[in-house]
Image (cartoon, rainbow over all chains, first blue to last red; front, side, top):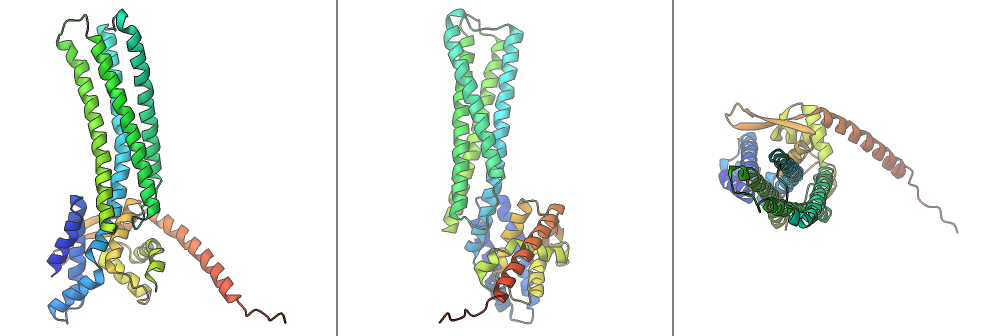
Length: 229
Length: 115
């Protein structure tokens, strides 16, 4: 009976495997201790009593899910800032490489290059400022006991901020890719091109990590909402 | 006591019980709450665990695994310094609130008939 209850509880939390494992172990210890406290009873009755006293598995899982969602959202806020900082460092490293190699955009492409640099600069700073705002916002929220409407609104705001930061970062990375492409005409392909190309791949990977975290928040929010319904 | 009323103060109840019990696992915290409240708090026991996780997330508790005499793994919680401070603040607020309500209810007298 207790193993069935633990399976049900762990299954409800399988969207967060480490939480699911931890909860299962903690609750298992609790339930068997409750059974031991009523050792004079029939074993089956003692198990029934322990489970009834603990509460409905789905209701308890919903409360754990809110904590998991809050934890993951805070982690996503940190990840957004770290990822954008990572893109910044890669960008600076590439520019240093261009300077060291004395690479420059050819005169006939300078006008378009200047425009792309402006787009790149503004979109990057927009993404950083919005991500910092999102991180500060979610960090300052208290973790609620349940997924109440006010917390849903807070999560929606955070999701919007993260999505805006990600969209701005995508524009910035595309601009970086265009600027890298503008360096190519008139130069012979060589191993030196690997550095800017790899740096663009790293930037794309950073965007991927950010999108992965935003998606994770959305999935956890959906699972928590389903449990809380 | 009303479940909804209790839920609003659950964090304070858990912090206070843990402060009294020292380091303790979930079951012992629940037993401490029952003992100190004279059995007045009748919440599903499972509700305490998400509260413990939430308080740990907020940095008010720390926890570690240990092995019980039964051989089962057990998560033991301890109040952090921030948790102690938070409990002291909540105690002060509660005292203020309770004094105010006590004064208000104690001062209630039947209204005199103006006629």
